[in-house]
Image 1 (cartoon, rainbow, N blue to C red):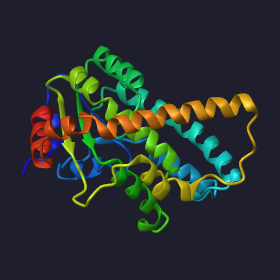
Image 2 (image 1 turned 90 degrees about the horizontal axis):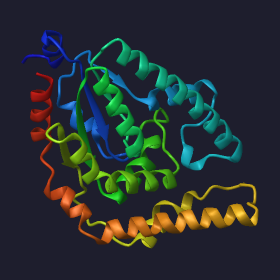
Image 3 (image 1 turned 180 degrees about the vertical axis):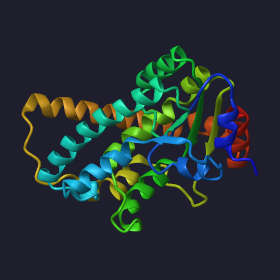
Image 4 (image 1 turned 120 degrees about the vertical axis):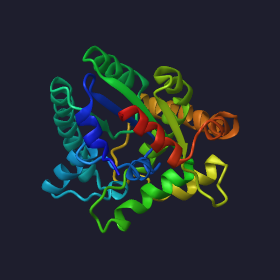
Length: 265
């Protein structure tokens, strides 16, 4: 079997960038695992963030964090993002081919990166991995314990927000990347909860942050408004045809791997 890294070395011309899109727990790594990427550089802010949390002696069980831990986590996330941006910039400057392992929750940031890569002479591909909201929340909830404390579990409210943004971004990304786009639906075989209130009660309510300082009336009103807008967005996604459209237009893991190999070769 020819390793993809060897194919990349034979390429005369444009470096390659693969951008991953998908909610936490979607299974992006699972899809990539079937590809022999060899020494292809993988950029992931989580790796930096997790190392920084460990060095700061902060638990990776972020869903159960104390107020003090949440404050330290935010500080380390800022530092991790700064280092990550430097790594991405130096990789692009060096014309190195790479995989960007993230969520692509922000269309604006993804579009800006795509433009920067195009200006630097890159060929760009997006692998979009969809998963059910409940599966995303469950995978996140179990991640810390299943890893023996070596991997992080995010606050479930962050997972909910990311899932909503990424699911809503599907058509935008499909149009943005054109032929260099493939999606995989990594969905659960089990019966899924379809009611947001039930999902919230099961996966978010048990991890409601404790010990938070009371908000003033204005701040609380903004928070309530944002929460209501997010709930409306998620409810709409759960009830309209967006999800079925993603599933219908997705390919198998093997199909996605084949398309990525073609892109890299």
